[in-house]
Length: 241
Image 1: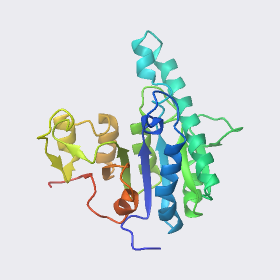
Image 2: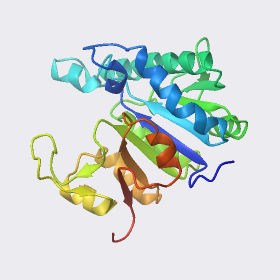
Image 3: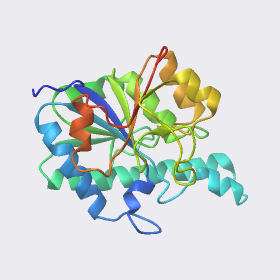
């Protein structure tokens, strides 16, 4: 294996990232660009798991705001993540990447059920694993699902791909003077209310000492650089920075 800092990682992708410049759905160019980023690292033997959101198709919390039952809306959102996961799997396999989709909601015709030991075995055999349907429960975000799965599979880092190149003390779009953190503690993220991941996901990572790396996936070659341990984005860690 090449000289990488991390050898088993979980990559969290937002559903919105798959839209590209569209207003809804999936831009086929985005999964292909992700495949181009991930394939060289996967070929070098890094074990890669992925959790993808469903916000490009449906968000349960938005449905609830429109009067829909929150649990029913979240169930629809979880099914949206399955659609995104299958789209990623199709693209990866067309690029020669061995890949499995594992769903927290049983639907054996299209995906394997998520079983922790089987998921780890897939990784050990060099298969990319995509965990669909969140945690399988309403009221939990895909951020929380990503934190949970990262801890379950003993990932070395949870990598959150965003459209921003790290964590700032204010929104860098509206505050050009905002300061970017290279590292920050879980406690600071929670106390400052920084929108890294939701509080449940951050607290779960804190309890299990799971580092969170936040970076901009839009930069070419950034995934390899992040896996190599180069200082890209911001890392959330335990202790003082």
